[in-house]
Image 1 (tube, one colour):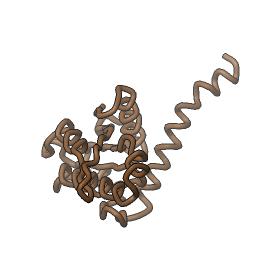
Image 2 (cartoon, rainbow, N blue to C red):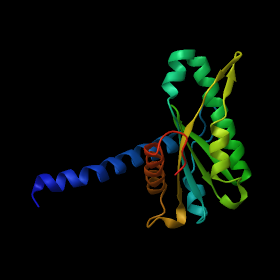
Image 3 (tube, rainbow, N blue to C red):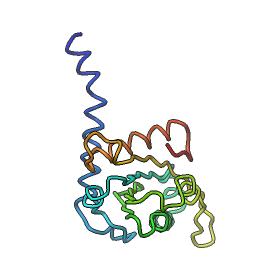
Image 4 (cartoon, rainbow, N blue to C red):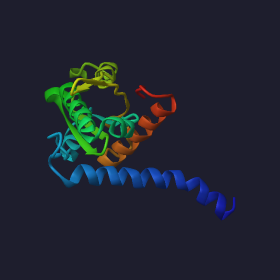
Length: 176
């Protein structure tokens, strides 16, 4: 194998590592998101709960909502998504906004949630803003902490991110 082939093979892994580090930094830098009020620090939950479930949620075509209906409508969608994710987590986890239209959650006891299908259904419910019904859909990726070789938040977020993009590869409105 030549150096070019080795470098090409390593680029996807490097991209996932960099993106995972970026997600971790976003999650660790602030305690609460000013728009949604969601938590943004979660490393301690993952460390204390070996059965934890880590989720990444990305709103599909969010830019189109902002472009067609304005930023206030986009903020309403973000707030509704935050509320739905936090409600799904309940008292067994925390929801976080990473920035833009990307959210994360860590659930310490996934058995006490309504399940991923229920979450996806809730996230795909339309949002009404000033009398307009806005269609919303989200892609959800997940990772179980106990399935990671090294149970760090960075690795969990990277794995959930890969899962989310695999769901997007199957089309919108998917959970992987």
